[in-house]
Length: 274
Image (cartoon, rainbow, N blue to C red; front, side, top):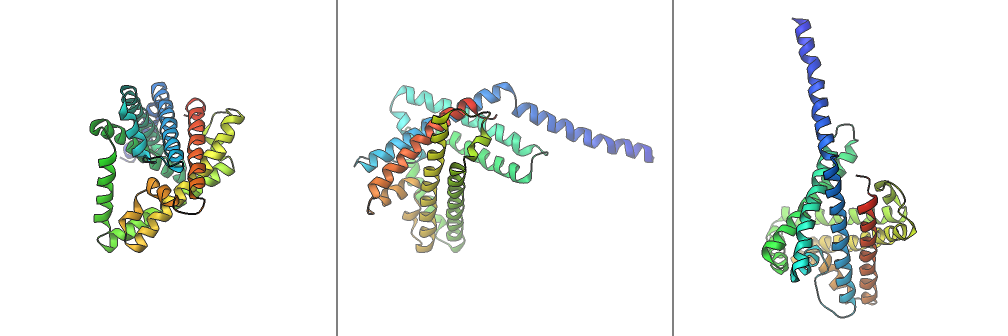
């Protein structure tokens, strides 16, 4: 009886090991790797468009300098819609790969948590591509988001949640700045892609981090003032910055930072450790 129980107990680790191996094989399949690299390339296109819109805002132009605005710009022509479809596919692959990383037990808890957060981000981006294709434009999405935030802030719990979201965004922004200044992004690459990509990573991560900190501060301020208009995201933060002294210069610099991040993302699509 004990021998039988011992044998049954011995099978459990084997099943767990087989499951882990299956997850590892699926997440590291060559086709998943190729698709994930497409996701990084899509990331480059999106950040390039955000950077262009930010610079346009700084010089008196219009547009929406956020993810929704960037994706909405791609609906203006057939090739842009094709890119949206490719982006949806690539980001979905990145999400699947990160889910695989989050499920692997030999990773540290911190690594698995970070992988899960990235999986959620890429899944949202993939979904945004699909919704933008279906809707044609992103303006209605922004109105819906504003309405949802307003309803959320109708009670104390919602206000606290918005404030916590702002604090998290500030933390992510600081993380980006540190990652850029200390060149920790090299940990995500198989090898050094060259000086041009290195400096693009330093500038891109640092200035994108600054933009995220600014956005998070607006969310926290919106929670304090109970005003949903202050929680509109990156686009709202940049447009509000235009009214400040040297605001146009700062918005232009942030726009250049997003363009630099796009250059780094393009290099990452080739050299990423996938």
